[in-house]
Image (cartoon, rainbow, N blue to C red; front, side):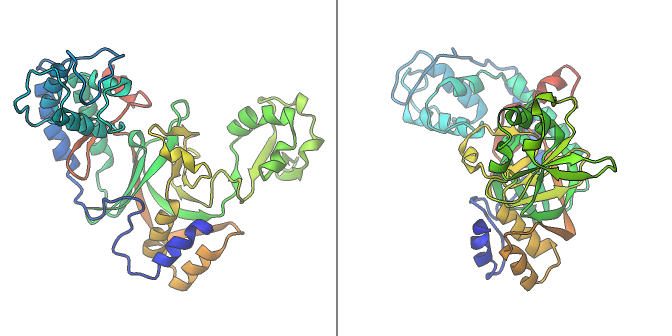
Length: 388
């Protein structure tokens, strides 16, 4: 477990808080209900104001001159990203002050805060205050439904924000990026409890993935499984599973409909679950886990999984849970972290509340209203009364 070496060193110190790669430690978490209600009042007012839209091909950089600059300035004054016009209210010059306001707008919408008004920024600007109001109202309803009887500490995964946070004593103790389910295989919202850590996990590949994604590869190359540290099992007459060679199967006769095999990926460098996974009560086969594809965390849009939630810094979460919730001795924890071969299941003595939410609008740790893309289209469904 090479990536657990740093947490093992951290283990030598007292644990006032674990930050991962975040600078948001010990910042007061705002009252979401109050903040959202205030934002709703603001956007109810904005929905009655003049809101300007912009052509999709607009490209505006600081220092440019454009006839769209006054409209841009007017919008950002309404949203509060620009707090003063100074002496350049009607100028067509894209000033430094306006550029800073655009950067703040971009940051609130999870866009690259480079002050360049390009296609993605234009798309966010062209969302009307009425649509933003609906996002806020939907998010308030969802938060109220999931935040009842929620003791701290708790974990919260906000799917459209691609993040996980650990909240304890009204502070953000952990903050990391996530990868969530693709739109056709969405991560399911849930109010549950995380109860088990599995180190060096095996991946029991779901039949839907094995029969639809791996089977076509096996038809071309049965050796694919060995290259990926995968093993093949055939169901037996007694209801069990027998390990067989993929070269013994006539794959040309196997289809997704008659696929009667199980594929298991053993622990190792190729394992899609990485070094650990975290289990919680759920009606579907979804969990939190590590990943070998760490380069994907650098992307802004991260809806790539089959529904599970991949974690940027799973070792930080594991360390917190082992120290604070497992009931294990320090010596036992060190032994668990040192093992890198056998699959280990660690049941937490004190499970942690976990809420997986779908908020496309919320107040962050600085009480700044954030908006995110409706990646699953749930906001649109609720507009026509078909929401979940």
